[in-house]
Image 1 (tube, helix red, strand yellow):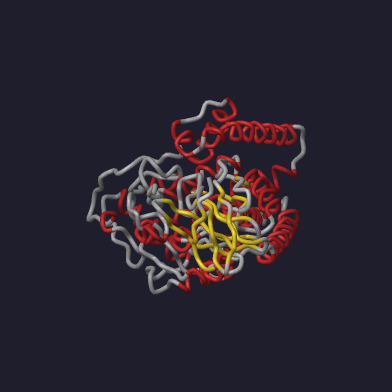
Image 2: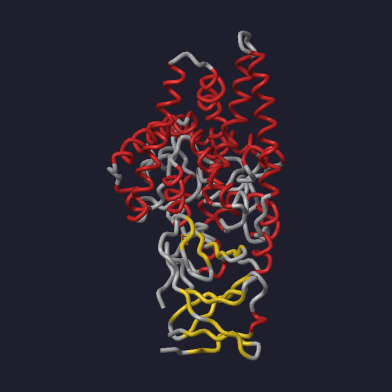
Length: 103
Length: 343
Ligand code: FES
């Protein structure tokens, strides 16, 4: 079942960057990358550090605590110390706003 | 919402930085790392030539020390920076240099990465930080063992054998995810095979690996340790604040070249996502929120050595100018806080 929620205005996220978005007791990371907007769980799968202070490198998010890396689009864990994939969420842009399907 | 754990970093230390500045400082590039690498190669070649020319004369002693320092301090720094993945933007370059530098440093890279994660999550937390190489508080004997790196060699030899056999210590199991243990096992096996090959090569009469790799590694270690001992010595354990557990000290070109700016150690622990080349910029950006760096390399080393010697002699451990945790300062005598966990 789809549950589309308006998360933020698209221009709130700088190019090649992310913001934290909290909704209904859950925390997410919203990304603006060269290939578009994406959403993932906000906490790193290694030690639950929030990704909000992480560095976006192209299509990759690097965790701020130990520099584990995930592919932003697929959530795939790319390099140690992360080894569990990140959950991703469908995103759409409508009227200049980012909507996330939190399921 | 699951609360995030309290890792020892900027947030736990009450240090703040604007997102835009952090993003700018955290930007990745291959260029600064390649420039650094070019310097290292040139100095290694130059030092190697001097060492070669000095063989058979007394000049071999200073030449070996100089070459050893130029080999070992940057080896440590590169192995550390690449274990964070921040030395280069290009991932394979990071990983290739992590494996090469860790081979010289004498630590299996997968283990190096995981042990170091615990050092960042729990900086100087007794029983949780997997990289506490000396007992607290440090005595003169502990300082000597640390300076010579003898404790480290012994610890690593045991670790290589145990990990290669798949008999992981409770400490290793504490900081390594279960799924990653086979990587540690195979990494240890590959390295042990490589070290055995190197030894066999030397035993077969080839002197150059002994002269240009093994001996300088041993001789250069105390110089490397003079850089690394300062990182946390005489500061607080079991505190969430990096400002209380970690030391920065003043440094210039030599700290950049030999140590990849890790004299900015407070800044590195606050924001480990900032690469070595941006640490001086980070220092500037947060200088009003962090303690003044301790005096330079020589002065800080001298004061730490004097403090540990005085502690062992039962004298006052108050240092003239370096930062010390209040409980590290006594007027004679001390109570043991913890043992080293890398022995
Ligand atoms: S918490 Fe993200 S890599 Fe460790």
